Image 1 (cartoon, rainbow over the protein chains, first blue to last red):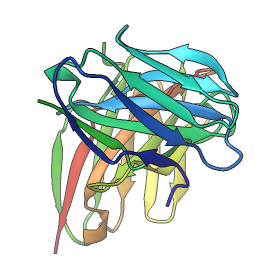
Image 2: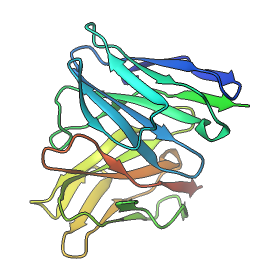
Image 3: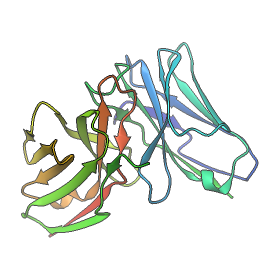
Length: 115
Length: 112
């Protein structure tokens, strides 16, 4: 158990809909990262928050948004869903803001299926 | 563009033998490299890392080698065990980097 909690574990929805994925980081971790893993793809970095502030953006679509709340949990909002958004979405957390001094701890992921 | 590449999608090795997983990177700013292991229905878990000031790091049965001039790293597992069967992701980060860049993964199968 990494200590990172993601909900829901599975989600099935229709095209055009909007969903929210939730992540609770490990106790004491200030950084939250969101990654997307599509079929046959590696983990694609979407966005990072550190202590409530956005720190870095990766390949995140404009239809997607995220935020980190004062209690440090984070939500990833996906709107106007398309079939291609079907993927495994991982949340990861770490103590520090940068990634060259330590590891990231990953949740089990939220599997999104868009029909 | 994929800055971290794992060109072998899968690898099959007999129990007791050595498993060698390879990874190439293109960004010369990367100075910290990690390997993650992922079992089905679980999130990736950290396995081993190496800083660019080193060319080798060892942890039990796992050794990571870094060849900076070739922009190549490899993970050696000796001896391989059936419980090592998983997907292995190579990842890299630059100084003050805010995100790990991952490869697509190599699925390792260790057969008895």
